[in-house]
Length: 342
Ligand code: HEM
Ligand SMILES: *[C@@H]1O[C@H](CO)[C@@H](O)[C@H](O)[C@H]1NC(C)=O
Ligand SMILES: *[C@@H]1O[C@H](CO)[C@@H](O)[C@H](O)[C@H]1NC(C)=O
Ligand SMILES: *[C@@H]1O[C@H](CO)[C@@H](O)[C@H](O)[C@H]1NC(C)=O
Ligand SMILES: *[C@@H]1O[C@H](CO)[C@@H](O)[C@H](O)[C@H]1NC(C)=O
Ligand SMILES: *[C@@H]1O[C@H](CO)[C@@H](O)[C@H](O)[C@H]1NC(C)=O
Ligand SMILES: *[C@@H]1O[C@H](CO)[C@@H](O)[C@H](O)[C@H]1NC(C)=O
Ligand SMILES: *[C@@H]1O[C@H](CO)[C@@H](O)[C@H](O)[C@H]1NC(C)=O
Ligand SMILES: *[C@@H]1O[C@H](CO)[C@@H](O)[C@H](O)[C@H]1NC(C)=O
Image (tube, rainbow, N blue to C red; front, side):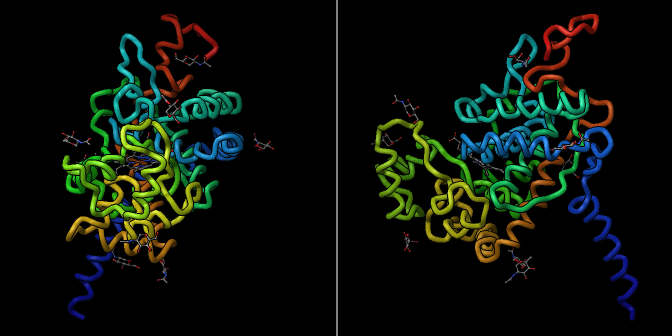
């Protein structure tokens, strides 16, 4: 057939593209620690299981850390650094301050990994595997996590201040994702991360009380749901009170986040816009994921791997931090002596 040669070229091009962009892991590799830290997954799993005993929210908090790490100068552990003379901590940027949590659990994972395989596992990789285990332990999908990221010796508080905001329009969110080569499908799939965890009232009460500055309600907000939310978050009340991001199954990783959007029960403006923005290309994707959880899980895994591949440091770039909260130069003295145990 005349078309067969062009069609096999097309297939070859598609295969190469998929390997590069989708199926492939870039420079990262799921077997990276097979020899040097074979127990990495069970160690991370154990710490998270333990933390879940006293904090049902911790799985959600941990995956959010990976997102906030990867979107700011790549998946390099920069989010975890505390302020020093040379580090302007991302933890103090508005999207993270009094919001990002789980740093103590990351530290616990790090110290168990240092005991089992000293100087081997980066903090950036810890965030990636902690995300996968958190999803798996919450009844979501499991996947092989590509490894080999190294840790930054810098942080960028300004860039962290530019993380996606719950008050942004869909256009603005799509722009922030496409700047990182993430598509509308990635945006929708990754927003599915809001199938567990909590949000403070301050991030959505404008939708109940004063959406456009005329004491109006967001028309896309289900009014029954708005009533429930107004009890939890009275006007002028404590903006730090917590609401479940997924009103139907708050601690389970499933596709109910999307079914909620279909009935106006997305909690954040940025959630509901995915389904309620007239003509948006995200609408059929939300419908798809709400109709088929397997489809959502597959897309979520693919998008998580893509997000986890955002400009990692590899090879001899960066370092393997001894303590996730500080760069090694601040853990070691000038002649390489250990200053503190960590
Ligand atoms: C699309 C843009 C996004 C916006 C505007 C956004 C915004 C937010 C906001 C405002 C909160 C509540 C924070 C607080 O109350 O302190 C939150 C929580 C959360 N976000 Fe997102 N987010 C986005 C994308 C993502 C992505 C890509 C993931 C992961 C794949 C994610 C996972 C989570 C999780 C799990 C929580 C709950 C954390 C906890 O309970 O500690 N979000 N997000
Ligand atoms: C890995 O961890 C398991 C327990 O979780 C332990 O039984 C086993 O000895 C460990 N293996 C190595 C090589 O450390
Ligand atoms: C996005 O893709 C372009 C073209 O392949 C590449 O030059 C750029 O570095 C990518 N950006 C990120 C943040 O990965
Ligand atoms: C609603 O927002 C407008 C514009 O920001 C503001 O002037 C007004 O005081 C707000 N009303 C209430 C009740 O908060
Ligand atoms: C506001 O709510 C948070 C979370 O429930 C609580 O920790 C804090 O003490 C409250 N603040 C006030 C002033 O009531
Ligand atoms: C609002 O939620 C209720 C269930 O609580 C549902 O029956 C109704 O259809 C929803 N309204 C809209 C406009 O989706
Ligand atoms: C919906 O899912 C099907 C596969 O089941 C896919 O072919 C189609 O492109 C998807 N539509 C959108 C808008 O993502
Ligand atoms: C749901 O999606 C999966 C994965 O794409 C597919 O194999 C399956 O056929 C779909 N199920 C239905 C009922 O469409
Ligand atoms: C890790 O570094 C942080 C920041 O310097 C410090 O507060 C913490 O005590 C260190 N942890 C350990 C176990 O030394």
